[in-house]
Image 1 (cartoon, rainbow, N blue to C red):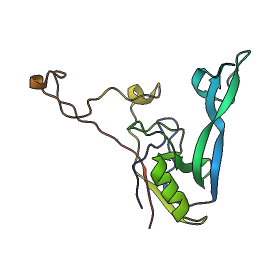
Image 2 (cartoon, rainbow, N blue to C red):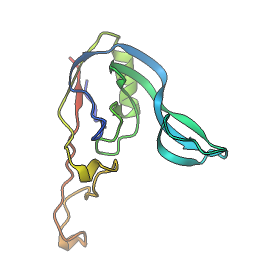
Image 3 (cartoon, rainbow, N blue to C red):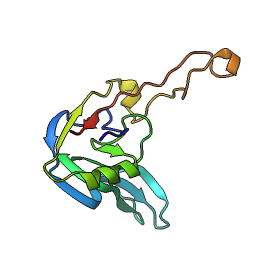
Image 4 (cartoon, rainbow, N blue to C red):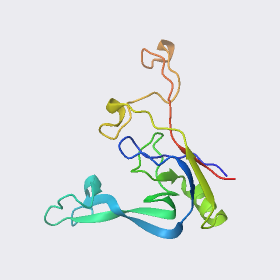
Length: 161
């Protein structure tokens, strides 16, 4: 099986190597990462962790990680948002329907191989975002930007036998 993914961003890289699934949990929540919301449920801090000071009247809400399949330390595969670049804190995010398929198809002990690498660009990942790139090649005739651009996505991908 294979899936498009979003892996660990610079500073939170997904471990590379051969592993085995060591835990499966249908409704898992991060014990470290999430967001801070006010008493109306509005997000105050979108990329929060448990060590951040929570303002009065707000609370920390752990990030949901449905169909979680842990394979190394805190790293695991789960359903989540794929922005088109490495954006997680080390986990391997997959589209919902594929995370469900993986979760149903594999058992604890299933081998997992993570390979590839995230580019080390301090400008790209220093603030957790990728520089803007056109979704397809542009030219002056299209009225698009005055340059040619192609998206480049460098990520680790889990591979299953």
